[in-house]
Image 1 (cartoon, rainbow, N blue to C red):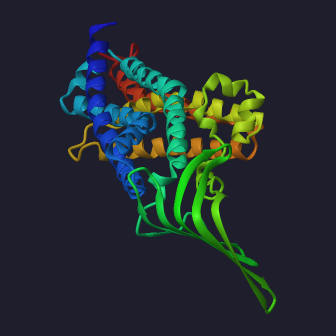
Image 2 (image 1 turned 180 degrees about the vertical axis):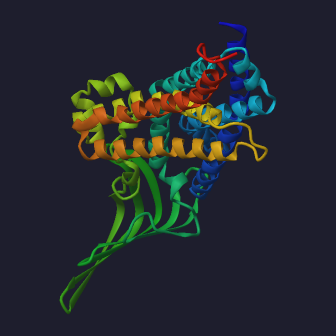
Length: 381
C-alpha cells in the first residue's frame, strides 16, 4: 500500500476508534440504565445486571459502528481539508477517486467487523441472554415473591407472602385467582414451597384453605375446603410470561438459511421468515463502506469557503439519511412479504451509486480547470 494510502487509512482508523468508543458508551449506558432498573426491581443482584448489560454489548456495537465510520470519514476529511492536505494531494495529481481508495479500504474493514458481530457474536450473546432470562423467569422466589408486599404476577392474580424463611419456605401465603369472571378463588396457607415441575414452577401449599366464590347471575355460592397439602401450577401464570418462543435472532446465519423443523417449532416462524432474517444480516455489513464513502465524498464537493464546510456536512448527513430510509423501506417491504428478500440489497446498491456520483461531481471542477488551463494549439501567441 502506498504511503499516502497508509496515512489516510491511519487517520480514519484513529478517529474511528475515538468516535466508536464514545458512541458505544452513550448507547450502552442508555440501555444499561433501563435494564438496571428492571432487573433490580425484580430482586436481581449486581452481578446479574452486569452480565445482562455485557450480553447486550455486541448488539450495541453492531449498530454503532457504521455511524462511527461515517463520522470518522467526515471529520477526518474536514480536518485534512482544513490543514490543506487535500489540496496538496490534488496538486500532486491525485483524483477524488484515487483518494477514496484508502477510505473504501477503511469502510470494508468496518464492514468486516460488523459482519463478525452480526453473524457470530450477536447470535451467541442473544442465545445466552435468552437462556439466562429463562432461568431467571423460573426463579419465581427471586423475581416475584417479595415478602410483605402485594404482588400482581398477571392480570387477575394477587399474591401476598408475610415472610420467606432461610430455607426458602413461604410463610403465611395468600393467593387470589380472579381470572375467571364466574369463579373467584382464594388460597391461604401457613407454609408453601416452590418446586420445579415438568411444565414449570409448582407452588405446594401446606396447612391451608381454599375459598371458591361462584357467580351465577344473581346467585352466589361460597365453597370452603381445607387441605393438608395442595399443588398449584404457577408455570403458566408467572414463568409462562417469559416462555414465549425463541427469537430468530438467537440462531446462527447458516442455520437460518437452511432452517430445520426444530428451529421453526421453537420460534413459531416460517422458513421464509428465517431466511429473511439471514439475508438481513448479510445485507447489514454492506452499509458500512457506503457510510464511510458518503462521509468522505460529500466533503470534497465545493471549493474553499471562509464559512467552513457546514453545507457539505449537511448534505453528507442527508445522503446517509436517504440510504438509511431506503434500508428501512426495504426491510418493511420484505417483512410484509419474506419472498421479497432481494430488496434488502437494493439500499447498498443505491448508496454505492450515490457515493460514485458524488465522487464524479467532485472530480468535474478539477477536470474543467485542467481544460481551461491547457493552451489552445490554434490560438495566437
